[in-house]
Length: 304
Image 1 (tube, helix red, strand yellow):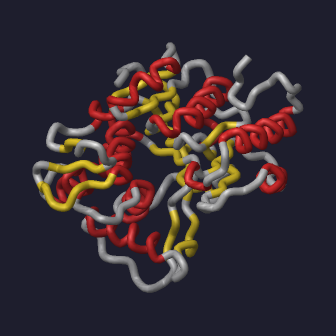
Image 2 (cartoon, rainbow, N blue to C red):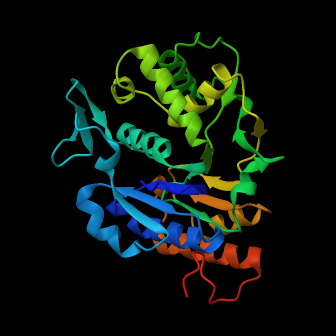
């Protein structure tokens, strides 16, 4: 990781099947963020050749093993890992990806890091002030949003409380911290990882890989609220259009979804939705043109 201080940086774990989506995200980051913002794309070693074409002075392509200890090793032919400190159970790729996000954020010298998965794009100018209130970084939190209809969210919060040594949450509806995109303070990430190690008495990576159900965003939010006493500023809106259902939409349906939103900075259409790339790209292009008054040659990601 670089040692030069920046206002904020963008972190994206990805892999070969999402390379087209990640290319569009990268173009949007280069177009809509200030010239000193770096986009750190982190991929499995075998996928480096697929992403290397994106590398430039603002886009850094990383091998994901830069952010994992040697005790965590990939199993052949599957998206599973094993922690040799604790060989059973195997570690799912989704959990390992969250470890990579935390490690990358902790190692960055920046006032803030913006977590953006490959299935997102920026659609408006975005800088550090986009995530601040009165000069303070605002954390997304939505009290009461974790209700009985979201049992996995509650499970993620319970896991976070256990990892941090906090009292387990009560039966009431709880606060949600999951958002797209998600902004973190790297200093807070470093201190929360120290807290996990102090509480669990093992390396934080081992503590996290021992969990079957885990959310890095819930961990961050639970730490800020439960250990630090709350954020300096909060945001109740993601300022994003998000479609997370695992169900495909047609071009008209996507366009209707997007056109109901005004003043957003980003769009997330889940890669698991089954929407063909060309349908998604066409809808996003039309949306971006509408927002910016752009002509037909202005791409979503800013390509010439």
